[in-house]
Length: 534
Image (tube, rainbow, N blue to C red; front, side, top):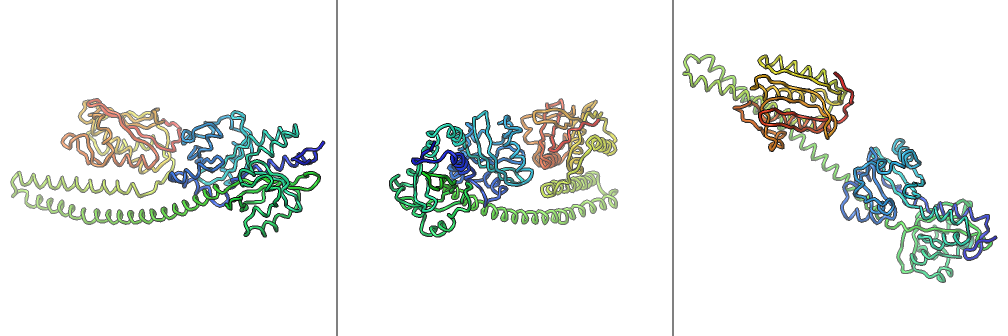
């Protein structure tokens, strides 16, 4: 029995044609010129014009971070999955589609990211009744994936095996332009409706032409040279310039399958217009170039700011602290040598000068330390928190023999971070707890760990003065204090320093309090081991 297109094709060649059609429908969006690591950075910062370009790409486009959470999804994803692209941002792909775990696409994503190699896969996802073709491009930051819904084509392939009419429908009703060429003369033997609609020639006009005539003059020689078949294997022959009837030049990705048509050798050709994709790729390359320039500019600016900060630190250290030391020293000399000659008020004033100069010197030191926190890098190592906390409390007791605070240390998990900076966090929080509970008859300070809405959190709790929660947002700003110096001494830098250290470790810090009943400060750290020590 012979199959017709509209001539006839032998049944023995039907399978070869089906394979060719399937292959021609694969991988139209191979992204060969742009590295995935740049694309992922670019997509997170593109403007509305660029997003408009990406949303016009005929395939789905997603960008995942290293945890496989969505960073970007274009509008085509809504057509493919039925999900609003914006609702996916920040969510894990396997949480959204758990049925895919362990399947071909799951393994392909992990293989691409683990091996940092491009991976292609074709998979059927039953919950969406979806055949999907994935081109997966990795970077150290995650994955960039072009997704094509090939469900229609795959279902058509199955149906085509069953009858001649279904075979004809695949050709005639295919949404992409298709045609049959004589293998020797390259004359058009048949074209589908998509080809007629896309190129503007009528079916009769196509049948009076050959494939050379839809090429611009500058590509005809190359086409004639490269169109000679090496074998009968189906293949994608690359991207070619095609000429529409109205003179418009487009870029088409062409795939070819060799078949028998009316007892002659022929070629079944599928052409996918990728002009918009190439424009989008060019736009991405331009954005990457601009991004590189901005990174260079900002790096230069950061280096300049850091140099100015170092200069400022030097000035503060030498130009401000030196006069303070001189003022303190001279005042002490006057007191030592002339205290008997001075009246009580004058001597008191000199002692106040020495005291204030000492406070100023301490404040300058704290500001310098605070400023350095923004520029230095973290020396991340495993930190044994119970030992660190006990050492801090021992130092507090040794340095303040008058404290009558009772310390209660609960469970603490180890953490990963800069031990010196984390020690400063505990010092500031615990010394604050001692200070603000010092007026209580029986001050009690608790240190431990608890579950919170933000995860496992360390805490320092006291039963001291507390504060009004409506002012809690001011706690962690430099020089903002909720108590006067006459009530409790302080510079207003300690909690700001704690906030900067915790933030630099990728954590959060917050407080809860009630006036007259005490305060609790909580903080989290990224990278906690979760191992509880006693």
